Image (cartoon, rainbow, N blue to C red):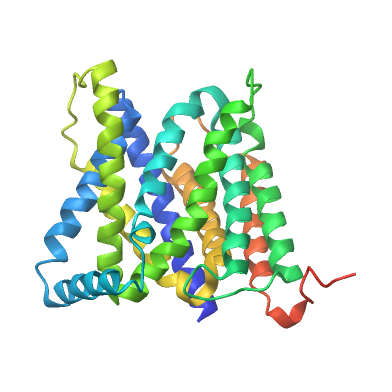
Length: 313
């Protein structure tokens, strides 16, 4: 089941990459990345609100989650993982222009990998305690190095790196988000209910951000009519849903690494099929993507492949 979980996370990562390209274009048309993220979250929330409470399975899952909250089997703060996704999008909008995409990506991935190792070791997620074996630690380190290689051509010279604190915090939140989303899924017994809760909390946070954003910058002048610009929310549903399923089989670290690998492969494929304006696929991007896949394979090695890192001499 571990391999199936990693594969599901990989598929979710590909969806994130395509979603990022679509939301980026939507943000370009609206000239506002926060509103683009709100539209994406909002579309996903509407789709889930129409699909979950209107089915018997969905209603049963909502009742189970409500009862689990009343009994204290799960806490309310474990149900707000979607806020981390909203924080990630907000950090992206606030810091990418200052740091550049490369520095932002490395800060997020490095922090997410560390966070995933910690929450797995503590046993926060539904997979329970995952020991710090050498394959897991080595795979995590290799993944960070691979991402650095993949985005090496995009590194600029930002005047200051202090804004990298925000994407680092976002990366820490993403590790925690995957763990608590898995717990919500265990309580509700439904991936769809968990995804609905995730989109609901994320939409609330983004709505607050957008109110401030619109008050400062005003409403967009152009409202795009192309239907494909609004499918980011549907892709987000797949990304969150696959992670919720995968984390109970593979643990938080492997889900995170699988998603990172999927994002790099998806972005590489998108650049090959529909090249970005002025963009070209570089050798370092291909090399970094290959190293990321290797990192996932190393981290997925059985626990017996290495002694726990904390006991090694």
